[in-house]
Image (cartoon, rainbow, N blue to C red):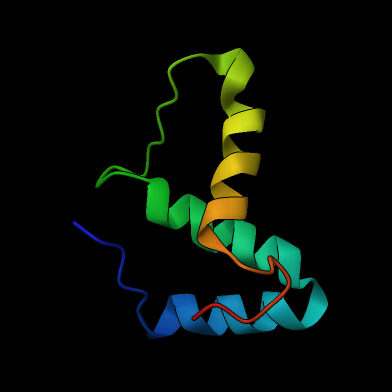
Length: 68
């Protein structure tokens, strides 16, 4: 099921985006990757940082642009 941000999430995202756009978009990506229980599973723990970097590049044209 796709992540659909509610009003509360949008407010948090907007506040965070004003402070640090990259951090706000990382939060958005992690919410999109999480399952219903809020868990994200990677094949190998060692590869998770590289995998997140790749996903950021794929998901966002510019990770510092507003994405909601």
